[in-house]
View 1 (cartoon, one colour):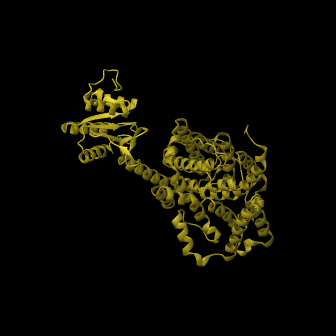
View 2: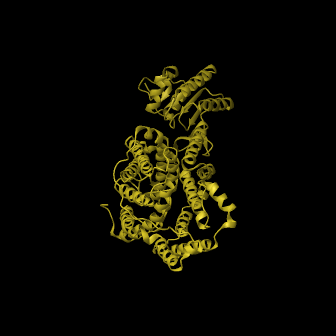
View 3: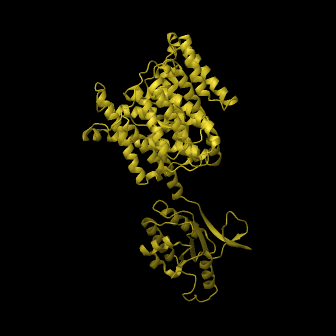
Length: 560
């Protein structure tokens, strides 16, 4: 906060007001999903935002109660304890939050945030689009005045489609009006806090016109009460029973939050540390555990609204937390007439602006396989869930990486008159090869998946060469690693070439590669006189041999 700009204060305060207005009904709803007191959702949001502001790295990510985490928590708790014992149920919910926090803390201390590096741009785009559609799907039933029973995106869409005959027309009309107003305000008055304005106006209208009597669903009465502090009172058997759910939640929380956090960090040109994100998640969940709350995570919808409102810093979370805390303590009765469709409209509009089609089109133009990966990620997130979808996408991305590494780019090199160095003969006109010499560059590390490909490529090039090849120079400038399988393949190639009277030479080998050659015995079998620092030195040696010049003494460029 030392670099805080005064120009940020107004948008931060407006965003905090809007986030607070959104969090109140969302927190109440998600607490009911988990199965704890409604007001617990408000204090979970307060604790999460304050803790994340202290320890989290993102300036825009809003932590607190969220649908996905609430659903996982409710499923786990329902298998361990009955809702007939509310005190024990609340203790187990707090224990689950504590376990998620401790697991995130351990992951952060062991610097496992590097796992986020496997989340490439196509995965980020696919996840964002999938998460936006999930958010929209979660609000569809509310927009039609229907009861939502399905928890997954396909089920939610089908549920609404099958029950359109039972939709509540006044709710639909109100929802369409709210969405239209939000879009128009965003286009024509972007500095006006549209969601906050709509919350106030629809609450007043619902109170004056008694919309709940017309069948429009409202938040309803809420009993205000202070938070409960302390550690959950549970046993080891409870920890063991909740551990699988805690692991799942910790993974989902991190994956979804770091993706959303990086999206806005890239957009606003600052760096998000994956390890610090783990610590921020840990702090938020531990804080919720001490206030007898439940697991929390990053909210895609509130984060999107925060960005749309122009929020610039974590002051948004601090002010929003204070506002929600004051509201929870003194003003909860004011919300009883807030139409639920208002919240649905706010969330849907924020989610629509999350959908990134232009980046998908750009990927298709640049590299279609990555565009396909983004689409597959979106579909996997929608069908399988956030964590499973991301894991599928990472597996596909790694598979594509291995596929490309197994058949990497390679080139036969030659000389160009007046231009230093050795160049790909297929890319540069006027490039000449040296008769009897094959200079071949392999643009990838040598490992088990491409060892055979290297041998086959060299064999084909040697067979096609005219005049016959007497020496093969392998340009290893791009080979930064060599595994045991590839070393064995290289030895087979050397033997095959030797049987045909051809010498294998390695040029431009870096220190790690030379070390591996020595450890595998390849250096001895090749002969150190056949391992050179540069391609130029290896070619010069070949040309001296062809001219009948005797080899140079040990001061030559070969590696001794």
